[in-house]
Length: 326
Ligand code: HPA
Ligand code: ZN
Image (cartoon, rainbow, N blue to C red; front, side):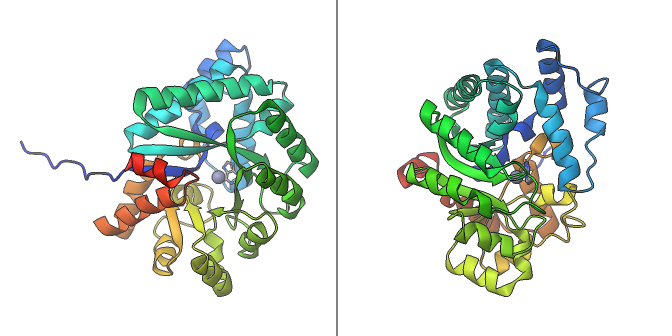
């Protein structure tokens, strides 16, 4: 019998992705065993069953705890490889990967080991799947800004291959402003800049990261829609917003996919792309998020193509390298 071929997916970039958020329960258990680290679950099924979140913090608690199994260069290589293989299968040609370096260094993993593993995984993604990877050092806003600056110093001293800095973790109760110096120094060293804002926090947080941190794009930014003046500015400046609709549903930033502001953001002329955030924990890689969003909002082929184009345009790739992926 004839079957309808799946809709052709335009090539895309993924701009909002946390490496630690790609850790599938099966790999977490394999690494726990390899490194003799205990996980407080009996098996991958039981860990996966714990993936029911009430808000960002309840997710972050589990995410930071499970990240403890990552110990060696091989662990980081295996994790990076597994993500890039899955992403490439879903049509991702370029991935900008945030890494929570502070949580790894804090438990005694050497910077050299993390970096060696990441570099091996990225090289393998390129060689085996033709997908390029760009690494983003994500500072954690619930930890002291002085620690972020120290980690940046270590990264610069080691010549570690991070192309950008970001700002992630708990938004409400932790301002971005203390990180101004870390971002300023990163910029002075030629690093690109992005930051999470207006995910759970107010629209003014998007303005804070633009004005105080000098970011070139905003991760999430959904609550910008609550302030007309902020929307007008983001539109006028064509600021890329790396929206993660399924993450917002799973962390209850929005009540349902149908209630997500994505269509309103597109209609307002905002420069949005679709991303997965933490695909293992939320149960959807970016191609699956794209399919869900397409169905929920009956997106046209043109709208889908626009979103995919925005993912490349908002990337930190030089234009000639974007052309190579299209
Ligand atoms: N928000 C903030 N920090 C994060 C997220 C997020 O969605 N995912 C992983 N770290
Ligand atoms: Zn995120």
